[in-house]
Image 1 (cartoon, one colour):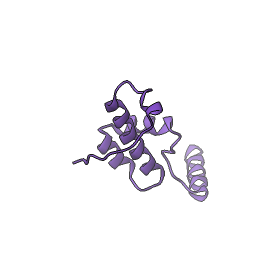
Image 2 (cartoon, helix red, strand yellow):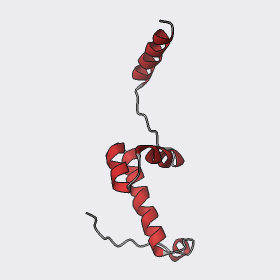
Image 3 (cartoon, one colour):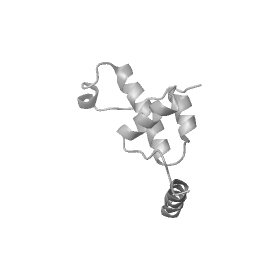
Image 4 (cartoon, rainbow, N blue to C red):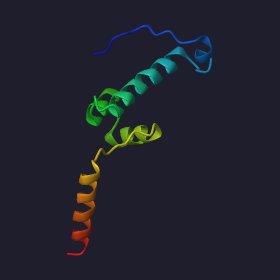
Length: 89
């Protein structure tokens, strides 16, 4: 399900897009990316909404510098320690 909304975009911006549909698709995609960045939308839901595989979504998020892993420093250090201990076993 989707909704149609009206967005005012300056003419100077619109002229850079090949079609209004291309602009609309980009704005829709960017809104999903921003919701993932803010932690409002999960990566799984974002992939579903954009009809992308998880790998394709990770590539998209990387293009917009959105982290695909969200670890605290403590959690990251724990995982590094665990991986180091696994490699020495």
